[in-house]
Amino acid sequence: MNATIQDVAASAHVSVSTVSRAFNNPSLVSDKTRARVLEAARRLNFSIMRSATVLKSGQSLRIALLINSPIQSWFNSSILEGLNTIFNPAGYDIAIRRILTLQERQNFFRDLPIRRNADAVIVTSFDIDKDEVERLHSVDVPLVGINSSLSELFDAAVNIDDVQGGMLLARHLLSLGHRNIAFIITEMYASVLHFSAQKRVNAFLDTCRANGVEPTIIKVADSHDQIDDALTQVFSLPSLPTAIACQEDGIAVPLMFELQKSGIEVPSTVSLTGFDDSLYAHEVGLTTIHQNPIRLGEIAARKALDLIAGEKITNPRETVPARLILRSSTSHPRHKAESITPGRQS
Image 1 (cartoon, helix red, strand yellow):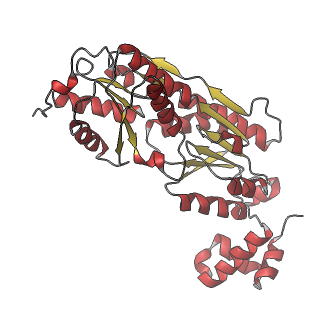
Image 2: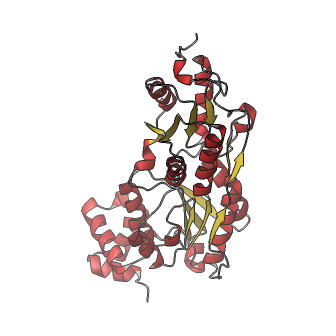
């Protein structure tokens, strides 16, 4: 049987009202007492609901969405739109939590079973470990992944085929005759959170290497000046690449404008690719890999609702094929890029 609030009170040697305040009004309880209550709750696997309606139904009517980048980014805002399209008519709210570090992720999965303030957890673009999965399973909270490289750990998942996407981009540039290729990634994709986009990076590099080409890897910080950082590193190379691949359109699109400001024409001097087919990719003529995060969100939401209802999912781990979108930002290398001296135009 599930532990009750009385069980927690007895274990922590406090009153039931103190346990209630520890969860609902922590400012009214000393840090030492609250820590003792939380420890007792964890030990007993106690869950607390958020309202009388929730207590009656046994559900919180809330979905926890874990993201790793700003909510206003094209991918996250599109995911949220897709999720809300399904969850809102079903009466569910979406609680967004940004996870930037391993510690933040661990804290979330440590506390959620106690508070029991979500009926399902959706994780976008990064992975979790087995212990965290088991904590949610202990209180019957389904876990759904979107673009998660370790999708087998999730109760359900939907992914863009990052491996296929990386291969398609590499084969396209190689087929055009490019051999001096640079690949720009953000440093967070090498972090302990195991971001799924690393799959597309690895597939691109492996395909190039299998064809005798060793791309130059350029790592930039996940910060507001990452495009300037990328440009500086590109111009510091012994020779200017004839092609630059970017892990996402969010780097490729602004980089295109900065290259052109510096007198480097795309694609006559340097070919450029992205990944996402995001908002401005079509307008600027960016060759990229198409993915539809609104659709990914809708698929994930439907799977989550089925899991909450205890229904069996016929296709729990779904992979959406990647599609190469050819536009004007790539062409054959027409001359030796290394002979060109870049200079930023005023």
